[in-house]
Image (cartoon, rainbow, N blue to C red; front, side, top):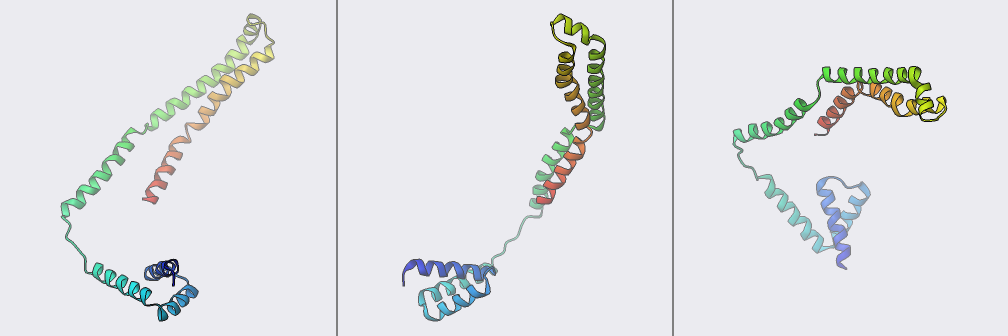
Length: 162
């Protein structure tokens, strides 16, 4: 028998010891083990290794556990402290509303003057203000109240994966 054939059966032995082999592959493995001495030896050695690991244990210093948890907790607390407060989110949202209203005011009051100074049509000025001032500040106004919720959802997702 060639070594590639044995290697595939050795992988099947590893899978069966891990408990992740299908019934038909298990049957094929059993039939092969009935006639193959090298694979029988591999199975026997693997079982001895697993049995030897079963008795392997060690004592852990109780303070080590506390230090590990403290080292994990510290970065999480630093991240939480670095997050903007609710008051800051509100101030940014208010600033975005003021910018939106300011852009609308500039358009209504000075749109004609701006158009004549730059030799443009009033509609071009209105579209420019709308595209580069009013719409972006409106999106900021709509986005910033949602950011704390999105941030909290992201943190919750990360905690679930840990």
